Length: 403
Picture 1 (tube, rainbow, N blue to C red):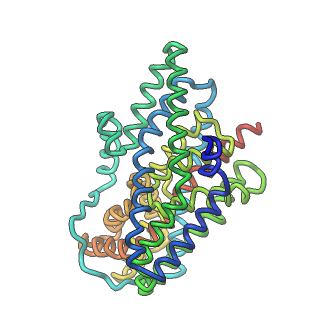
Picture 2 (cartoon, helix red, strand yellow):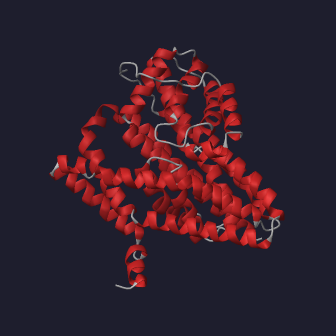
Picture 3 (cartoon, one colour):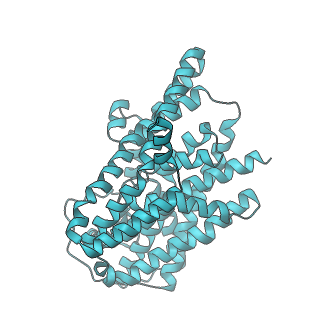
């Protein structure tokens, strides 16, 4: 078999259709033989680990190469992308407040989860972010500290703008090589999704979430409203034409993989690949997409807000709208400090609960509830977070290109 024929078999065809087939097969296997389904979970774990492994070096190399070879005027696009990230996160938190007011939820609390180390204040979150900026570059790469990776890549990229043309060519070629490796990894997404779905359903089952159906309904309803109504409105404000074709592409091709990997960081390669196909220039996508994985956290803001208000209602605290609005602001700020890994937003709940003087032991129990429903909640949260990164980046790029 020729190399070209092999490549066409790996990379050809409709990726979303193949992922859907993998999803259905995973559901079938979990229903027919749960033990086998748990065994094939290693395929999903391998896929997620592959994405997480390639993401730090991908971000570092692409940002470094893009800035070293930077085109004049590309900085002008990053500011409106940042504005959309911040606006989208705050609007998401406000939406969660409204849904929680319309459908107030109380909880049957569980025992305290162990080994939790939530942040004690916004100052601690800011301190962590600042310290991550000056992390050792090798340690940042090893620990997938994307804030530190971005800082070093930007700094070295600026310094290398004055490098010899041959050096810039090497950086560009290296970036292309890393992008090819990413393409290979993404091509095996259907197999990864098959393993992830099979193991998740076989281990947890659908019945495990029935007791928290109302809470899940408020969470998922808020996220769906943001994804299908508010985000398209923000995109329309930017591009001034029907936003749904772009919105649906981003949800389908970025949201699906993010739903199953449950990691914004792991989904960076997927978003980079999608942004490139949507016409976003590398020097914009290579900075905006990793930045979004760290600060564009609409799903996290919804999770923090809904669970905090559920804790308040459980304690028979009924906040007025002004207090809830303050919660939206705090949740949006906290969400920007959420980790880009599964369950990262849950540890921010005690900080938000402190607004209502809810004790830490109660807040810790709320985190426990979050982990129980996390298989569904965190998947939907990550899908919203990650798909919005590429959606807003592409919208700004389209708006600027049409000027």
